[in-house]
Structure formats: C-alpha cells, structure tokens
Image 1 (cartoon, helix red, strand yellow):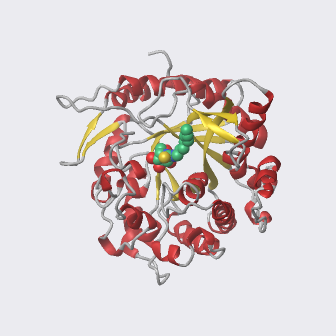
Image 2: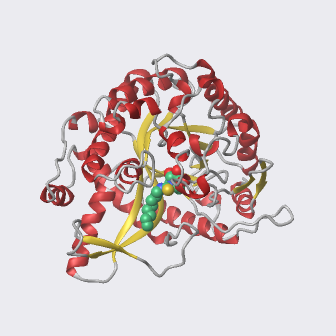
Image 3: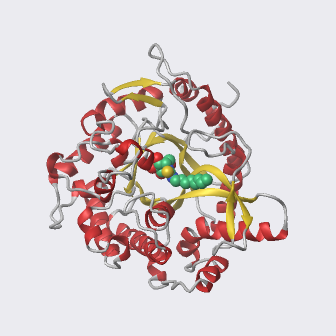
Length: 439
Ligand code: NCW
C-alpha cells in the first residue's frame, strides 16, 4: 500500500459521512413531520423509478449496527445530519422522541471513540416552512436559528464540531433554478434570494452558537468544484473566473469578506436581477473552519448565446457513475485556493464516488473506489505537507443510500446495502480502509 495513515497527523480525523433523509427512513415514526423531500420524492416523475426515502437504509432502527461498522473499519469521526422535521413540530414544540434518537446516536458514537460532526441542514426543510415560503421567506433564518439553538442546547455538551449547512449551492441552484431537487422551482431570481437567506440562516446559527456552546467549533460545508477553461483562450479563462464566482465564491466570500464576488454580481445585475445584500454583518460572523465537499472539476467555455455567457463542456477524463470526471488534482488545487483566499482551517467533509457495484458471492469488488480514494488521500497529504491546515477527511458515504433525484440507482457507499434485506456488506474499499486505518 503506497500511502500510509502514519504520514497524516496523529490527531487527523478520518471519518465517513451521511445525511438524514438519505439513510434514516422511518419517515412517519415518533411524530416526524414531512420535509420538502418527502413531498418531492412522492411527486411522480421527480425521482428515478419514483423512489423515495421512506425506508432508505432503515438507519433509524439500525444505527447501532452502523456505528459498529464504523468502529470496525477504524474511523475516528462521523459526520451526519439532523432531520429538522424529526426534532421540532410545526407548532414549534420540541419532539422529545426525535431528539432521543440523536441523543442515543451521539452517545453510541462517543462510547466507540468516534467524534461526531453534526450538519444541521442537509436539504430536508420541514414542509410546513416551505408552505410559509421556504428559503424565499426572510423569516426562515430565524426559524433556523431557533432550530439550531435547540440542537446546540441538547447536544452541545457532547458534540463540539458543528456544520450549519451542507452545500447551499445545491439547495439554491438545484432546488430553485434547475428544479432537480426539492422544492423543484426554476427561477433564477428566486435562486439568488434563496442563496441569500441560506447564508443569513447560517449566520444567525453561528451567532447563537457562540452563546450556547462555548468550547465548540462551527463552520459551513460548500461543494467545491475546480472550474477550468475547456480550451485555452482569454474569453474561456474569463468564463472560468465567472463560473468560479457563481458556484464557489458566492458561498464563501460573503462569509469572510461580507460581500458577493464582483463579476458574478455584475452579470446578475446586467440580467436585471435584484441582489439582496442585507444582513452582511450577520452572514460574516467569524467561523472556525470551512468544510469542503470535493468530487470533480467543471470545464467551461465562453458562450455569447447564453444569458450567463458560458456553457459547460464535457471532459475527457474517466468518469464515475454520476458522470463526474475523476480529477484528484483538483482537490489539491481547491484546498490551496480556499486556504490562501480565506485563511481558515479546512476539513474535507465529503469525497467519494458512485460506482457500478455488484454483489457477487457476498463480495463487492470495487477496486475503482480504492483507487479513487487512494489518489484523493495522496492529494490531501500533499496539501498538508505544503502547509495547508487540513484537519480531517470524511469519505462519502458510509452506506449506499437514497441519492436524491437518482433514487437508489447510484451507490456511493463503502458499505453495500441490499435494500431487500437491509443487510450490509463491506465492499473491498471498506476492507482497504480498515487496513489503511489500522494503527
Ligand atoms: S448530488 C451531490 N452530492 C451527493 C449527495 O449524495 C450528497 O448528499 C451531497 O452532499 C454526493 O455529495 C453531495 N452534490 C452535488 C454536487 C454537484 C457537483 C457538480 C458536478 C457538475 C459536473
């Protein structure tokens, strides 16, 4: 084995990550109310094969087994998300049974020496809040603050690592522009407003965190793609800068610098869009780290016929089952870029791949995933050696799970889930990780 655990700092977190709606199931249990994803996934035609997260990996009932699997592999960290509609009723009273689930999960992790990292929002907005306008309603930030405060109060004595939002680019662009994710809107002005309210919600949560959890750290996780010009030309280079500002800078700059990036803002204004810029002091509350979800690069080209002046171009590198090019170099580049531009400690809060996994004689031979992880680990190590303050790495994902609009057709897990029996099987990549992590 080329790369070794011992080359990483001793206290480095090697973990794995999941999200609530993708694995928990038990959607009607213990008083849980619907989220936008329950409604979206039950709307015919929205999800491949019309699948939904009703049962998913049944993690709500099998969390203990799943923690034992993490322990067996040797992870020392686990990033999971809280289902907001499980812990707060629409009448704003807390749901003790829902909270107890997370109490038990956290206690089980700690008993097994696995550090919990909690994401407060991984896309499952309570549906009643959508009915009040969802991410378009400015009050959403205060609802989120109350929900965050509840979780800090309940779990903050034991959980010291918090993430406000997962990939607000996805919540805004996939949810409000491309219509691929809940709530399925396709309006660019709404997208800009949703992005602003997501950032405001983040800021309000950070503010209240400082009052409640004095000895913890908090950050935000963004999906970070390396944006490259498809062919070298000045126009394509400018297009790449613009796209980088739209997908990456828009969700980082306001938090650190208190303003949106100029080129992207200029483009949106030219299109006649209104850019809300209130509450920048709230949005730019000091945070402790950035979470980086890295999967791939995007190739772009200048396109004067598009209102956004660019188009995406298909790349030639080998791709995962998601159609995403495999490009480990981009991980190093983006860690360096974010570190230099914002100067904060970093965690890779997600990295991994969907593969053509087949269960044969109880074995899943996912050599491609071993190779993928190994190459990305190497780039992470290179970053650390070059002085970038990278503190942890969470493999997406522990389990095969409900991959949003792709349903169960895409398998990201290092553990295979047979959805008929709910039996879990360690893939070859999990066995490789176990070997890698062994002291
Ligand atoms: S879809 C998506 N994902 C996957 C999902 O399972 C997880 O919940 C998310 O945090 C895996 O990780 C995230 N993210 C959208 C990424 C967009 C990448 C852009 C590629 C364009 C070519």
